Image (cartoon, rainbow, N blue to C red; front, top):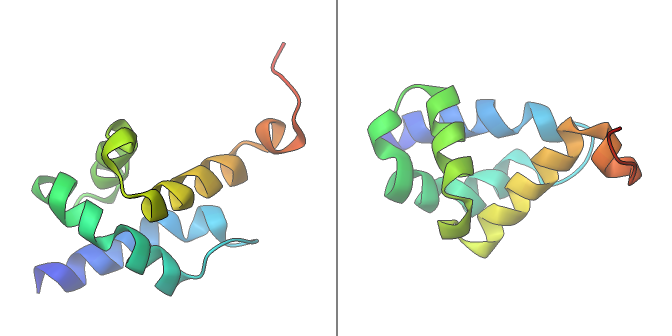
Length: 87
């Protein structure tokens, strides 16, 4: 039951930011499930806290999950995608 809840929370947290392009929901789950359970299980079922927990521990994420977070960060920050800098 807890694994299903984490899967649903990860999908709901990561998918919107990557909806235009990037890994599929199944790819995201596969990449980050283990990290979410290992690093942030204490925050289930709070999606925002899971996302924040994983972002705060980015250096401890698996390489596959880190790619998902990098893609999410770029998707949510158009200036970063365009290569421009904030004033």
